[in-house]
Image (cartoon, rainbow over the protein chains, first blue to last red):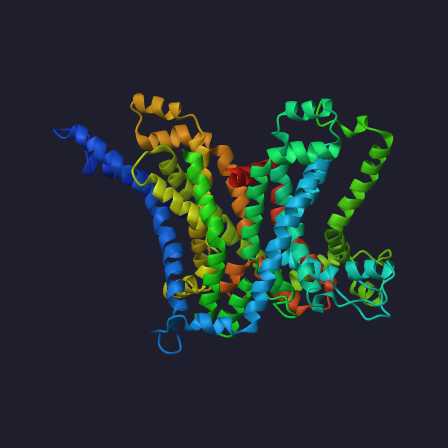
Length: 333
Length: 282
């Protein structure tokens, strides 16, 4: 069959399935199981209405249970067992083994560095861009352009930045943007940027900052526009300068949004994988937890340690998760 | 008017603004500009070191046809569409239903289920890798597009439900009550009252999910292998490995790979930004 036709068929079956499931299960509930007639009419209507939400929820809960809840439990189990010994329970041995590896500590250290730098830089640049572009006529165009990297995949961005960091021998013209700039500014000889420890991690972070700044800018710019004008007006009448207005009037009023943006980017950072994988694959001391885990599972084929490191990522995410659930609850009251 | 338009402020500052901003913008886009320029150069230009000067010949058509002829990039792109479109439709359809249930009905475990979805949204995907891979293998769907799409639908449903539920919750509830008083059945309320009002949310969510899935690389490597099933992100990675030195081809490839989401973004910009704002702030 022609692939386009096949795709169309899949879509029809999928959508038809959804609508069909939804329609017929409701009909079944209302007509057959709890019919709204006869002696128990009132009670049946109430019963049907109690069951109905679960009809809507069932497909999603089933899917999430299968692909989310079960795998989390399974990974926890794997991290406590030894696959080579037929899945025997080994307690915390995998964690101990992981702690003994210098690569793990390197990954953890790098992850913390990413956590410190990337959310701060992306939020800061985003705020700056939002503030500056709000005041010019071609601001919307500038915003679109700043935002564009957000639409590019991490792997694509990794490949693009690899070209930026590319290095050629001394006597040839440099094709890497960074080396070209470095030499133009009086650098002695072209550097292989990806092999200089510490700096290479920072160069990888630049890629993520480049992608996430657009996101921060869009959200923060919406928040900045929501600030009541009277507050800014009052400050100007009182003689506040532009910096005072920005830091003492505007920023405090959008603090909530800044926190949301910060945590969202923090989550992205904790899971960062594609960029490191595509650009250095954790060589030259650029390892991060997610890539360490991938390495353990696929290259070393060590499921125990790999799962243990996945649990560490989970552990790091948990405070943010709890904070978000707490916030969602507060909002509900 | 606040903020004061820059045209009304002092000469010096206006000048700084007009000069500094475009320069900053060009610096910001320099990687993209470099890639775009490289993709129209000939291989000879790059090896000869004529990189920053005017290209000796514009190889736009040659380079772009070369990647389609010499590599399976067309296949990769087709696969990307095959994974992305069903996922968008499936996840949005599912989340319309769950969002409706959580937003409209008041039942005892409503909050609990909602918080489950919130929590599920934050689970790092790495933790799912091994079990999901095993599960897909057991179901006989390893290395199939269906397997990859099914997983994406399930995983995205958490975020989508959150999004839809908040959107429905913000709708005037009186509409639904009025329909109920008129004796309209629940399914008709969903279809004729709630769904039409959800159109902007559906558009925003579709654009968001489209870019998320198109740009996914992790699950593509975990659940598929080879040019017959892998999407373009994975394709780009392996092509980059194959042509280490052929930067003009790699550049053309990465531009082709980025085209659909970037086009989507420019065409549906309003929805995209509305989606991001709704999803993040709520």
